[in-house]
Amino acid sequence: MTNHRKKFKDETNRLKNWDYGSNAAYFVTICTADRNHFFGEIKNTKMYLSDIGQVANQYWSEIPDHFPFVKLDAFVIMPDHIHGIIIIDKQIHPNDSVIQPNKFGPQSQNLGSIVRGFKTGVTKYARMNDIEFKWQSRYHDHIIRNEKSFYRIRKYIIDNPKNW
Image (cartoon, rainbow, N blue to C red; front, side):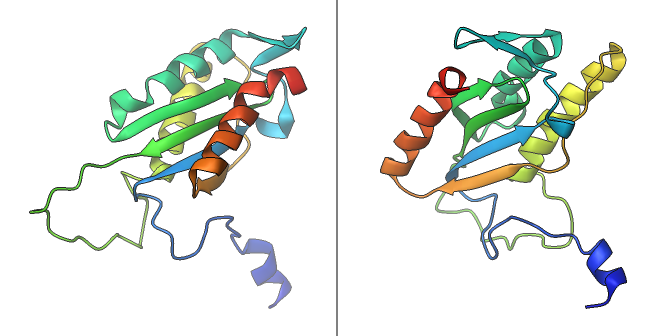
């Protein structure tokens, strides 16, 4: 591969051949740019949210209002990142036709669109209120494949502030 192609190749951490709009539980981590502590600080194992941290908290809880097929589980805001479990639970009816996923552009009912909507909402609020804030590009995700993993990740999220 030439240097030019290497420089502009868009690497992805997403699992190949996985439909991120399919019903599953996803462990998501979203970081701030340069890991800046925009969301607040931890004192004595307790997270104290800044103004933008409070907005992020509110907007996260409103995700199911915008995506009715989403259920939220454990969630924590840390000084420079957010961890959460997003469960996509679309009701499938026997009479629904099988629709092939669109592979040519942004999707509207998948994990990426959920995270994109959340990040956009927080960013717009920050800009409208002249709050210094910026996300790291992209996000990290992990498909939770079994109950044992689900409970281990949930515990990790809940315990995150005291392990900071």
